[in-house]
Image 1 (spheres, helix red, strand yellow):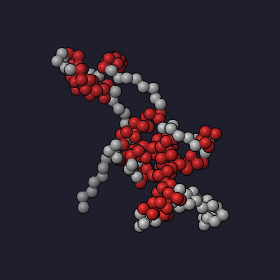
Image 2 (cartoon, helix red, strand yellow):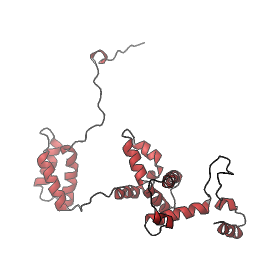
Image 3 (tube, one colour):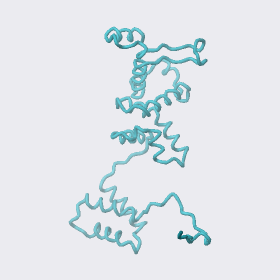
Image 4 (cartoon, one colour):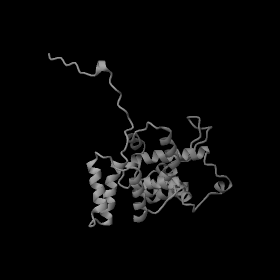
Length: 230
């Protein structure tokens, strides 16, 4: 690594070797009493590329072939390092995706363990989700879950919707839902795409979402406001 750094400085004399490579420090001579790994732009580039290749199964070190312990401290350090990188970087996108995949399981467990976590807090912890291409990262998370998939066709959707409608018909006083049902069942000019849109708009009427929070009942003594005019 050091020879490469020296070559860079030869080509760009204004650059400093410490920007690209700082050698590791052993515990004996460390000021903080802990050994420090090598650092620098060149080191970071090498580690990120190595991690990217590992994720796509194109390369593995001899140590990885002998033992591959996902719970080792080195892997935990790599995950925390990747998370820290994502909090302050949004480019290059290739490295973003690499670090996002690396932190997938950590992120899933973190969110699952905190049921009171708000969406805004997730965005604060993972600011890369505000990026215009963040939807691809969410798709990556779903891919990591390895959920069973099924191709959604017009036929399978129609079967699903018919079953939902049979089990949960619209309420008698829901005029909007009745209008959608009539449109879907009796309008012969309705295209397949328009019918699916109408069915999607009808679904919330058939399966209304429930609030997660309940408003506490107010006792009789506090039911009325006591207003005083000065």
